[in-house]
Amino acid sequence: MQENPYPDIPKFESSEKPKINKILFVFIGLILIIVVVYAVVFISARKPACGNGVCEVEENCFDCPKDCKCGEGKICSEEKKICVKIEEKKKRYSNGVCDPGENCWDHPKDCICGEEEYCSKEEKKCVKPICGNGKCEDYEDSYNCCLDCNCTIPGEVCNKETKKCEMPDINLSDNKAKELVIDYFRNNPDYQGLKIGSINVTGTSVYDKELIKVVMIQIAEEGWYIYFGVTENGKVVELPIM
Image (cartoon, rainbow, N blue to C red; front, side, top):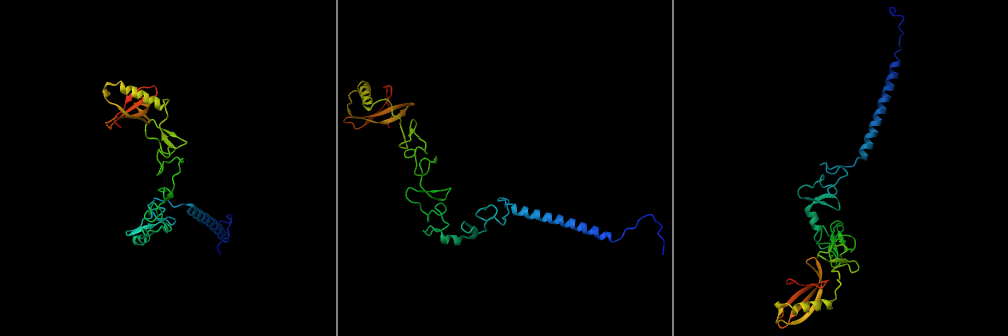
């Protein structure tokens, strides 16, 4: 047997190599477990991104039509949220019956709204207008709900009690307005020889940015009318033919 040429160098037993391999395997195993757990948590927490062009597991043609498109000859069923043949939907729609899953917006022939109701595009159901909710809805206007629908005629203001747009009253009585118009009419050379058949105050209005009372004169035996406006300070103006 050959003697050891390096007696001072200690010898290592071969049995220590398997111990190192076991520790390495355990370490690698722990890393793999951590990676798998992280991947599972990340995938489960991730929500499908609608609009990325991929129809993912939790997406459908109704909630994400950009990604999940129906093929030729098919349409998306909003009840089932899957693509069905067009003929299948036509059998149910336009049959005169508002079936479950139909609504007045998408199927107006089947789902007809009642009196004084309208179909809401946002809610897709029949609703009644509510005066005072800040929205000028169908069947509302400035003369039945000025709280929602703004007044359109210059000078009109919203009467919150009647909910109608009205001309504000002016400090001038109807009788005084008539007297001023009669005096103007009789002293105007353009109307010499004409007689007043009747005279009436028709209401208030705005003329040349001034609030006026409108007075109508019917010419006797002629059958035609002349309109005048009287301002609060008593000024009389002839109005264009109304």
